Amino acid sequence: MKIVIANSAGFCWGVKRAVNMAIEAAKEKGIVYSLGELIHNPQEIKRLENLGVKKIDSVDEIIPKTTVIIRSHGVPPKIIEALKEKSVEIIDATCPFVKAIQDKAVSLEKEHFPVCILGNSKHPEVIGIAGHVKEPLILETVEDVEKLPEMLKLGVVCQTTLNSEFLSLATSILVQKIKEIKIYNTICKATKVRQEEARKLAHEVDLMIIIGGKNSSNTTKLYLISKKVNPNSFHIESADEIKKEWFDNINSVGITAGASTPQWIIEEVVGRVETISKGGQAVERGFCKTT
Image (cartoon, rainbow, N blue to C red; front, side, top):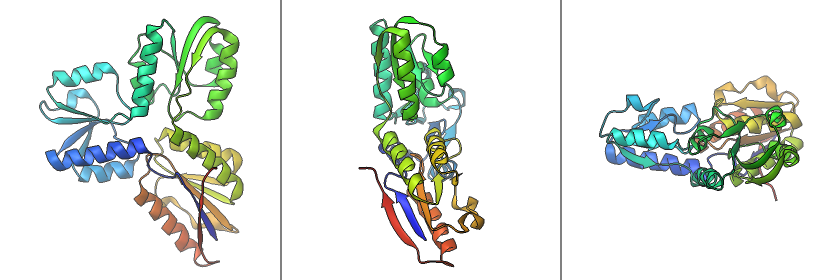
């Protein structure tokens, strides 16, 4: 059986940066606190906790004069102010690409453009971006976009992990409604590449495995993209979820993973697939990447 692994599977640059910053801080301080999950992967969160990176859910839980990590998704300015009032040391691990979106939203508002964010209103990244402007419009679905009334002006940014197909469709609708519009395609390049690879790989194999937290937005989008192309697609968090019966009459397996999935989990999944397949044909590993 052939196993094809997406070239971009696993940590993106921003997530790797945040994890490394947290680990280094914990080595120096002993214990540091992450405001919310540092990344959306339960298994990696547990590993980080063992290394001294403890998750807290609100500013109220913070002990004064400790060290707090701002996760890669970023936070609204009011959270930073609340942390300063607690006299804590702040280590800002906000992904620079996310920070750039926050800055674009602020700039649009200064130019008197109502700010629209395409993305999930409950996602911490979107909450952080929205917190930088006074009256953001958050549109999650095509229906939301279609319901938007005609406007004179609108500035648009989007969640870094947004499905590129949704952005294209939303754009085609918005340009018909808005007289003066500025649209920034702020989907992260790493997201675009992952989505393209997942779509391509799903076409080429008999079965797809998408690895990542069930609470991970970008992993869920990879799964939905794959499932649309190849119904024989499965979203798992760990190798323990793999079932032998998935591989009946399967000659090729594609594996990809979200931006919050560490390499050690990917290797465990690949190892499990290889173990299952050894009863049949010899395993052949390969890599998929877009051109």
